[in-house]
Image 1 (cartoon, one colour):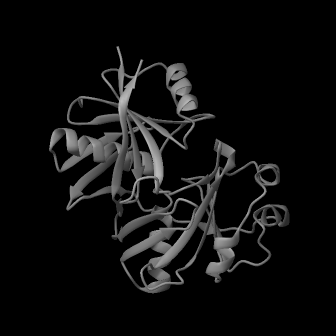
Image 2: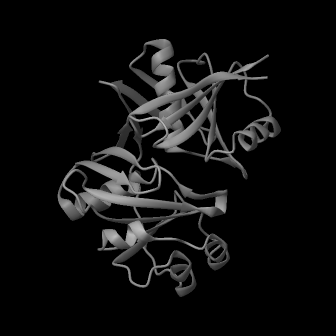
Length: 267
């Protein structure tokens, strides 16, 4: 049976920007081998597989990169939610991940929002080899989030962030204990509060065009820096993307727009 396929650009209002995301809506979850093969065929950062229709008011969702399954992905969840909102007319829905984490989603005025737990980082000292692989000499602060296996590095110079040209082979050789590095800085324009770039060569994504889940840490970090609970971020990748972040005492809400670029079937 053909599998309905959508390719959605997440965290953008313009096609060919944001994060391109294949979304497969399936009546039953394919085998791990088939999902992996589809992800390799798509050859995009993350491919989402979602059971449709929902079961017991919950949508089961899985995520694959070209190197295998990953437990969570913000931009792929946002892309999937945006399609389901259009197909069902619902304004709220719930996803369940392979780790049995329930993610709430809502739709409002053309934007989709996801609710995540709040995560914190602990102080961390990156190795000289890792910093060299990034092409950074100095940094302002660094912290590691165990829930995300992600290292966050702050620079006080937005220009440094924008000019980074990492050596991904050296990066993976320098540290095998993490799966992602996020470099962040205050914004250099009034339109945004902070900037970020995300590098994930450990899971087959050299630079992620736009990232969702890392704002579960960045929201609290920039709330402390800026004294704001409603934040707007720009991911300064080649494609670029715009993320809206709402900080609450017990959760983080991450939102943005999406654009459908492709609709078809996998045979």
